[in-house]
Structure formats: structure tokens, C-alpha cells
Length: 424
Ligand SMILES: [Zn+2]
Ligand SMILES: [Zn+2]
Image (cartoon, rainbow, N blue to C red):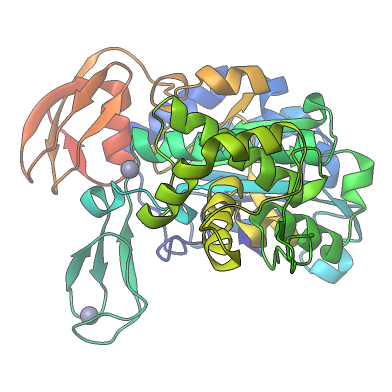
């Protein structure tokens, strides 16, 4: 079983280190937080897993009949990470999966910066080869260019650009796919900030819980435009011209037409659209006639100079922008652990936040998920630290062995990443 949101961190299996400073703060948080915020729906039917400082691997197969016991466990153990199963079982405490008695599984969508390309990753992400100590910027390669090894310490960072992009994708998932295409009411889904690099959307109604892996896969493929063929959905080069889509078409056909209309309307407003220069020139030359046809739901997409090949390139780029970067394995796997509500994330000290669709718009993870506020702490960095922000203050970048006076939230953030010590 994998835990969503951490499964890509190759070093997650090792015994976590947690400073006494952080541990005491985590414990204080769990003492004061309300039970209701912590408890997921159908508590008693879920398996829980925890990463606990000083204990190897994940403490799994935990189950709680009483919300107070669950809170008590969190206070006593102050876990670095707390997860519960998306799956509902009759016997969640049994330690063999085949004895837990599966009864259904929430449908989960995970949007994580790990799966989204942002230009800033080249500046703030680094990796270190565990074989030879070689280092590089950006995402770790498949194979170390120096020694050929494939084990790396991933030092992926999080910044406003990355998290804004994750939020944009989450809004796209909810508004364009779940609400518009699938017709789900916005209040039928639970939205969470994970506490580190992304957002989760949970669908917990019975109809979703009963979905099999194939149905989940089909939904994930639709959202990620996997295997999408424009000719199959009706884009046809005919002898007399090109038959395109209308904005009223269902599914991807309508999405592409609406995306095109928005893109060419944006041209008038000076907004950039992501098609290659040659295609852009052709679109610009034809934009008024194309806009008129799209507004009139005219399927005729024959335009001077734009043959089926050029259309193919344009539509491909539109699809790139319209599809949503969910982490597909999380959605299709019915045996997955997911970060527990209102628990603290051991790599940031941020709290997992439940959000309404409206709250999502204004949500600022670097302020709203910061639990430990105020006071100044003197810290000394133990490694180079990229620039980061906590609340309204930006810190760093720091070199190794620099000292600074920072807020508790910033100290916790760096301590959670093993990047500093608190000095007297
Ligand atoms: Zn190497
Ligand atoms: Zn970034």
C-alpha cells in the first residue's frame, strides 16, 4: 500500500528524525485541536498508519472505535505523518489485507507539485546520488550520469509558484471536470490542502465508494486526456473541408471548442496562448471568422492555410492546457492511505486543511496552513536553503552555517526539513 503524497519520496521509509523542539510543538498542537476536526467520516471503518519518530517504517493496521482514542493516540505519539485508508473495511485492524473485509473506497484525486512541471524547480530542487554523492539541479534523473546508480535523495522544495500551479489544477479538476463534465454538486466533494505540496479532493458518497478500479481508471483517463483521439470524438478532415467541434458539444469536443474560443478571445486582450509561432500567426489571421463560427456553433473549421496537420498541433496544445494533472495511481488504487484531516505534516509543520470550494480561491498555504506563529527563534542553517516564505516574511536564501532570527513557523519548517538547528 502506498501513502498518497509521500510515495515518491524515496527516503520516506527510513526512521524519521524529529527534533525535540518540533515534537513538543506537535504534541501541544494535538492537545488543543478539536476532536471533530481530526476525525474523518466513518472513522471506525478505516485503517490508520503513522510515521512515528523513533519507530522504524510505518505503524500500520491501527483502528479506532472512539474519536477520543484517536486523538489520544495523536497526543501520545505526535506522529510526523498520519494517514488513514481511503478504503472502508469491516475489520480495519486486521493485519492482512485479505482479512480486512473491503466494503468500498472513497474516490480520491491527488494533485501534487511532484507531477507538475514548473520552471522554478530548476532553481529550487536538487538531488544527491546515494551511490556516488553526485548532485544536480531539478528533478532526479532515472540514472545517475556519473555512476549509473538509481537511488537519490530528493531535495524538492516548495514555493508560491509551484503551489499556485497546484491550486490552479485543483480548481480545474473541480470546476471543469467534476462539476461541469461529471455534473457533481460542488458540495459533494471534500477538498484538502495536503500540508505540503498539493491538494486532495475526496468523493465519499456511496456511489463513488462502490466504483471498481476500471471505472476509476476511465475517469482518470478522461481527466488527464489519456488516449484521447480527436478523430474518435468527431474531428474530421473531409473532402469539402474540416469538420470541427462546437462549444455545446459534450465531453472533450466541447472543451476543445470552448478552449479555442477563449484562446482567440484572449488574443484580442493581448493574452499569450501556448501554440507555436507559425500556428499562432495562422490563428491570428483567421481569428475573426473563427470566433464568429464558434459563437454560432458552426462546425466548419476550414480556414485559409490551416490544414488538418496544423489543426492537430493547435488542438494538441489546447488539450495540454485543458487537461488536469492528477496523480493517476492515487485515483485508481483502492488500497491507499491518504493524509488524515487536520494532522501535521512532518516535512513542513503545516497542518492539513479542509477547504470549501470558495475558501480554496483565497487559500494561502504559506500563511493559512501555518500553525505555529509568532515569537522569534535564533536558528543556524545546517545546509544551503533556497528562499522561502512563511506568512508575510520571505527568508533566505541561506548558505550553510548562516544564522538568523526567524518566526516559530519558519524555524519549524526548516527543522522539519533537517536544514537548521535552534541555537540559544
Ligand atoms: Zn551516482
Ligand atoms: Zn517552485
